[in-house]
Amino acid sequence: MDSNCPLCLDELDLPCRTPCGHIFCSECLRQAFKANPPWNRGKCPLCRGAASLYSTIAIDTEEPLAVADVQSIYGCVFLQSGSFGIASYHFESPSSSYINYSSAPTSWRLSDGSRPPARKPFESCTYDPVARVFCATVNWVTPDSSATFHYDARWEYRMEFSDDYRIILGGYVKAYDIDGRERGAPHTFPSQLRYWREFHPPSSLYGCIFTQLGGLGLASYHFPTQPQANPEDDDEGEGEGEGEGEGEGELDMTGAYISYEAPPSSSRPHSPTHSQSLLLLLRTGTRAPTLTPLTGIGTEIQPGVTMLRPDAMIFNFNRSGMIAADSPPLPSPSPPPLLPLRQHFEGARFDPASRTFRGRVYIDTSLVQPRTGTGTGAEEEEKEEERDGWDCTMVFAEDYSSIVSGQIERIVIGSSTTASTRGPGSIVAAVERDRDRDRETLVYGEHMTYELFVEEEAQMYHYLREVLHEGGDLN
Image (cartoon, rainbow, N blue to C red; front, side):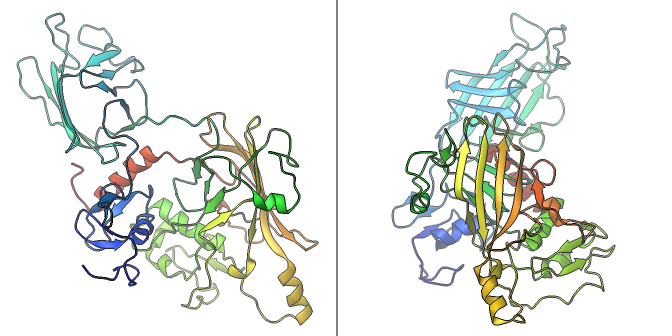
């Protein structure tokens, strides 16, 4: 075994082995997986073979890097595109599994005009726990009924489940007529039938993640899984009891942070979300803007867009999506420092009654706005005393599915002036046609859209994106 990690080129630290046999530092592989959500899987950095934290083994312990929260399909429900009761699959036990039609569209009718039953059982079921493959039959024509479903008398199922049982990533449904002849091509998972495990909405903010356009690690909001001690508040004399100094009934949300851990790579296929994310990075300064990746995007950048860099340099894009001639010179190839991968909220509090979160984020402006060195000593000293940041107020939907209102206000502590707000990670605010227009606040639901991150759904679309990008068969 090579003693150096092929990613960091340093000596292996907690080495792990992917299914394809390549060895990396455990943390290096975890960081590599953060190129796409969810962060528990991806491609081997060397051979591009499929890998996940569940299938990668820690060499020291011979145990997987992560263990799935379920170890079998039994006890799980799989929803078609996230919809319950629209041909959802319910695996109660090896002897009791069925298709649920309780919420099926009224247009779904059997040949005798009746609606499909609320529970249609799978028959002749088999399950291979090693391969995670379930096979079964659904008989529409029975001794008690001759009604067919769209001329189908029988369906034969084969389902292949992911290693964490979150999605159905392969298999098919074959349909047969009353004479036993196969009717057309099979319907395949997941190109035509997209199923992921039922997600139970949260009852509180604890443990939730909220993203823009599904961009995990692109200014995504992460909230702690449980209340945590807040020594910083004690040091500042804000009181020792829960919620003291912040309002009756408010909860301490110490540990909440904004994640900039997964900036997009120029090597990945450019999609509208990807190009928007690049605009996001340039605007917020989460990654130093060399602008080199932008040359490959072409017309995906909106023509005529004006984009403001964190150091106040403005770039215009012509109709071909390239940097226009009247833009400033490209920055130095040596990137300036990066913002922290995790920017923690200070004084974070949450009021469950109103579902309102409040917190402040401080930014070291030297990371996003280099010193000019042209001011006097007194001016430079005054700048050093200023703290640039944002006051954030977020109001969540009743089911915590999104941030429905609230605002971000940019502040400069130690200065009598309030700078215009650009916000920690606003995609919409990044694309402004009027370069002279400033806002004192950014409003959730108007300038920014944040939704609850659902890992099951994200994993399905990650799988589809990876397979389609490679031009492979989805099955």
